[in-house]
Length: 402
Image (cartoon, rainbow, N blue to C red):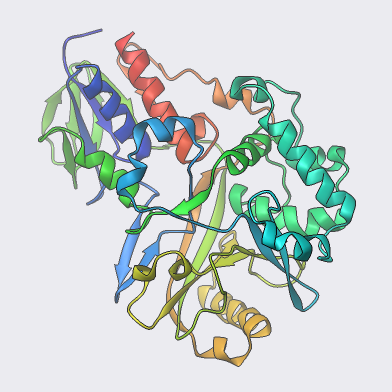
């Protein structure tokens, strides 16, 4: 490799993990980020004392490369309950993990969501996804996630009432056409670890990574405009010498994307007792899932207030009408008190996540080296997730170092 430094375009999780790995291996690099802060799609905005993640996101503590890269201990992580509350036929039903929350076992067994056979199959799925190595899991025969659920023998009701909103909220697509390899990977991560939120919001993850870079490595508010024969030209016209450039932004190579809209509300009292994920098990209404981040961390809202996060799959042109439709459904679920909740903000994210239909391995195994001088990294080149972003950044740095 050339002794000239590496320039990384983009300070999302992929770019930051690439920079940290290069730094660890003694390779000089600089990171240029077009926006005014790090994180890419992993952002947290503080609005009137409310901590709003840009789209509902969680960290799965079982992610292997993330464990090696992020210091979980400094993030003050709090977990969601294992399981979910499912809204169906006018009631909320508890589906807990009997291995982790034995106290929910009876409520889960007698819940009308799925049959006893469905609940027994959940244990079978856990056993299956935990077997073997991750590489072996990703090499298994591949179909869509919907097809795999049907092969496992889950009833139509279980799929429609639980898996559709649960996996739909992860994949950001309701038809579950996402690769079964991604489905089994995600289920393994949920089985091995917990879904958590950092106390300071999801952006605390990339912020922590950026803090570990040496002074002068990272520059925000300045993107890379073009690649030259001996370096790059920044948006302000400045030339920076570089032997290798890493494109750590999705660009046009990410393929098809899934969209999502997240709405945040301020409530005087939490509509949910405990850190539950709430799923819409009915086919009606715009809401896919809901949670109350202040049930994990009180500092997500000012004193005496609760923060409600609502996820809607896709984006619509008329956000005002969407908010009215969401509000109508919230009132159906939680009564007239929901009509008084303050609408804080709506985030419409058209390219929130790479849509990863079969065959997934063509994406996961995509070469990161485009030419002798150009490399790429990003979650769309792996299992699209926090883990995918971090793991490709590390792999990119290792390929550069040879």
